[in-house]
Image (cartoon, rainbow, N blue to C red):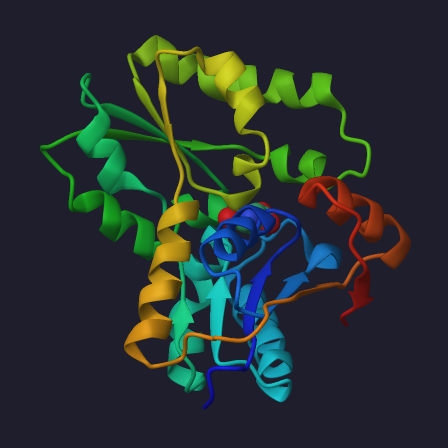
Length: 261
Ligand code: DGL
């Protein structure tokens, strides 16, 4: 394994771009391959079997390139598939989980709301994570069906997103939640809208920086930090023309998107 190899990063769609951005900022010398599995988004309602098999297909592709590490930039895919990936592939695999720990430290009301997919909230991994905070803070699950589908649109329906956010966030605020965890990478892309609805007083936490830092320390521990010039390649399993527009919009610059099947 050599340090000049790229890092493979994937999500069900554009959500993982929030992680890609942080990784690129922290590690500008790394070459990064990003796969948006857009044709299969959302992963949230899909079962473990599908997500494990699709994650393995993506990992196979990465290993053919090859890559020196894989980042699962998706809470849902991590919950379903990170164990299988770690068992089957020899490269370091960095996963993610909702940021309960920093949220528990921030919360004064000791009431935290977790916005995430049904898949993440229903997973054994999340149940286990949550149980570690029993008696310390109350954690209220808020599945957000429909949100990812809207965020995946080239021209998103802002009113529809706001109305879904109202439905999901208001009941949490009424319960006295003072801290919201963004437990899905897609939601980081609409942090401003979430902030608008939650209000300035509410803490909003995500895992994006933590994942980038974790990748940096894993690469460093393994002597894999690159000293070359970094680059980014984008792939999508969706319609290339519309994905080109969507990824460019979410990334903030025009990007070339290649086909991934
Ligand atoms: N962005 C992903 C996550 O962090 C997946 C969302 C989905 O495809 O349902 O969970």
